[in-house]
Length: 498
Image 1 (cartoon, rainbow, N blue to C red):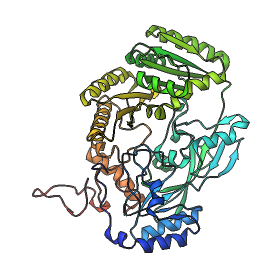
Image 2: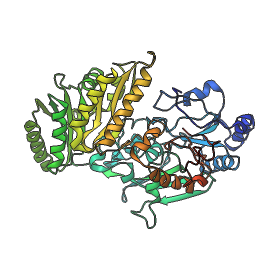
Image 3: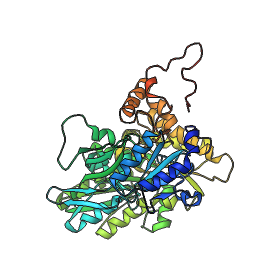
Image 4: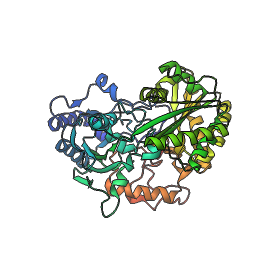
């Protein structure tokens, strides 16, 4: 796996594979267990396809009772578990382990309740993000967070990664739209956090679970907030001679007190790739393209369009097109939504990064990425949620050329270091997974990481849930606070560290 260090497989578990598979077939009968190597290849990676690993066995439960029994079985026998939703994660969060049961939640695919008066939907975790909007749109409602992969990504995976999307600037990430969950702990206990009501009393455990990347428990039900569709939504397609001018326009729009429903930016390589792919009518003679969507009452939208257009002109825009119909507005977004697959047409491979910076640093970071592109000799196409500073650089490389994947990874790491240096963070929505795991010390000191690990220990004291992800060291809970060097030697030398 490209030199990626992962926890050493447990020999005792590997020797008992046939027994474990047989027991899984008892717990999840029918077609719920996949153990043939060829059949398991469909699960060997998530959206970060640079890393691949066959699991010990794939288990696809259909009921909460089955999930509980699988987790309790594995907990009692010290068997690792890797939870998986639709597998669209771009950080390797669902990367299987050789000695772990891959628990796939895709058969939990039903919407359980729709409550329009209280504006909530209760769904199983395998329901797709777009599936929730499809279920309520006939009544004029929708679910706001909309990742680019919304047609495929699951709502349970969205909770695990705290996913965002083009509308998260105004309407929030998953954390701002999830009201409650049902989850199963590693010991098999089923518990509920939150519900259809607003804020609950006590510790914000729902907030802890949202974005926990499968390290704390397995989500089996999700209650989300749905919103009424705005009266009017229109989009502006604004082109700039430089990315710096586009970035400054973003900062000025927010500085003027305008909060668009969505504000996205693409640079020249991404613009050309998207236009060739979907023919959305993007201008091809600009270096940066800004899509600004404004929604609300029509009179307010008309006023804001005029204000945004004036700000764009002050920042040197060379083209500005305003959607005149719903079809045209959707066509503006079609290119942005298809930008990732579109870039796949101009490069054999690409490495999709995810870092977040203060908006005012956009020009500086874009310039820094150009310098890094020259340093590594690899192209980069930029597509990002400009309004909240969430960058998605796509590093272009060819995996068939020896050393290019390693260069792409180093390039990506330097981009993330730059994000942290200017006051940003390692991830905005993709999560840490394995991709950013070893960069965590760039952002957190050992005290910070120890405190995060203590939360993990409270939920999963034996570190059986998704080990090797997020934390740069694998340690037993009893070790916390004892990681000192004495006589040049670390304590517990038998524990793998990576």
